[in-house]
Each structure stands twice: as C-alpha cells, then as structure tokens.
Image (tube, rainbow, N blue to C red):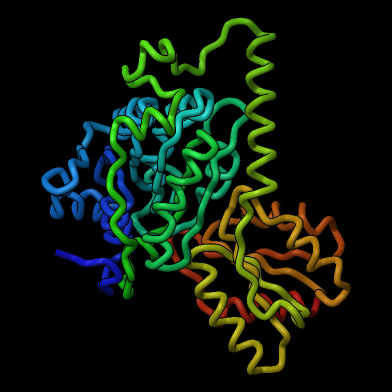
Length: 365
C-alpha cells in the first residue's frame, strides 16, 4: 500500500493515473493511443475498482469515451478521459456538448505531432484547438499546462475542483515528453470518493435520479430551439468565462525582474527554455522566462505588464509547433516590443543552443 507523501519514480502518464485514484475520481473512460497509453495501463494494473470502487473502462473508441464522460459528469460524478491529439480531435463534438450543457469533466491530452496521424513523437501543436474550444460554438475550456511529472499529479485534483466550481470541462494539455519522462513524484493524499448524499448536496443540478421528491427532475442538454433563450444561455456562459479569466489565471515568472529579453514557453518547451535562459545569463544576456500555467485563461495582463516596463526589448515564444501561442503573446504585448517565435516541427524537440541562437537574432532585430 502506497502511503501519503511517499516519493515514487513515475512517468507523467503514470502520475496522472495514481493521482486520479487518490483524488476521489469516480470513473475513467479511455482508449489507448501513443504516447498516453500508460494512463489506462496503470489504472488497469492498480485495479482501483477493488479498493475505491472507481470505474475504469476501455471504451471502444474515443467517441464513446467522451460521451461516457458526458454521462458520468452529468450525474455529478468526478470522471475523466485521456488521449493524444488525433483522439482528442475525435472528441471535440462531445466536449462542445459538455460545455454547452455545463457538465464538468477532466480531459487529458498528451500531445503528439500532426497534422493527421502524424507521428508518435512529442508536439505542442494542439494549443489552438485547446485554447479556442476546439468544437463548434462559443465556449472555452480551462487549460492547464504541466511542465513536470509532479505537476501532472498535482493538476488532477486542481482540474476536478475547477471543473465542478464552474461546471465546465477542464483540460490538462501535456505532451509526449512530460507523459513519458520519469521523475520523482510526491503523490497527493487520498481523498475518498463522495457519497451519493454529498453529490446531491454539492451538485443540485445533476441528473442522477436522487432527490427527485425534493427538487424535481433535472435535464442535462445543450439543445435549445428558441433563439432568444439560446442567446440568454450563451450570455450566461460568456459571463462565466469572464469570471474564469479574472480569477483563474496561473503563471510562473523566472528572473523577469531585470530581464531585457523574455522567453515565453509552456510545458516541456519551458523546461528546455529554462536551461537556455541559464546559459544566456552566463554569457551576459539578461534573459527571463515566463511560463503560462493556464493556457486559457491566458495571462495576458501579466505579459502586458512586462512589456510596459520599458525594460524588456523583446519576447521570444518557444513552442514545439509552427507558432500558435505567439499570437496570444503578440495580442498581450500590443506591439510595444518585438515578439518572435522559435519552434521545431514533426516531433523534434528544440535544443537549448537553438533557443539561444533565436535570442541572438531577436537582440539584433
């Protein structure tokens, strides 16, 4: 039996599975796909249905997985799924349904390269999909970007808390580097699954068959044929997204107080950029690192504040894609200083020396 505060050597995907059990997750529904298959494999090995009663089910497809998540979340259960890029693309209709019906749930995306089937190697090319909703309609997900195996574990409970606080799907957007790498992890303490009475008290909106005599029936749907009613519902959702933007921004700033050039990176790219920052400072360049932890809501005010200091001469976004977050950085900076992008494609991970070369080009521009 693994006790609280035990330190284990785990892959990022394995940490997700361990954390899900410890955070009172009621059900996992998923389908294997590289490079995230260890989430399902670890859950199958740990057999939480024998200890906590957590359901672990390999669905017949990603489409089935997301609708199982929709159904479980609609009853007030803490449920999750995980996949990688092309699998998440298949889930977009269901994710949009969940956002429209205000159903909480956790979706983990351990990204691989594309477009299409692409490669099984790491990528960050799902940024636009994750931060712009991905499916049809006007909606947002809260998107958390872990940069370590420890954060893979830590963000599971946070994601569930945010999902139920706002009745909205939350995504942990990782990548193949973080999912497959091994690090020491302190697992979260065990949190028992909620009882039916607790779910009834915490989720009075849930359609779970409980308390019908007390409150009447609940209907979970994203469908509304009356345009006036649908507009009112959309305005309600937009107000909720504004509240998220005001209250749930998370970021990490390293050595930005005196920085003349700031690298902006998330996930595994931020780890590599941190090494580039250290090397650049050893060579006399005043470089800082700004890591968005929430990719949505994006920390635009904080980045704008750095640009307004008059000290920062330029920003460099480092992404394992063709340039996606760079547009959010440019929107935040509003043309005050140059914003360049450096990235690698096809599953190739940037090298710190390449980032330093990109910084040198920025300094000469």
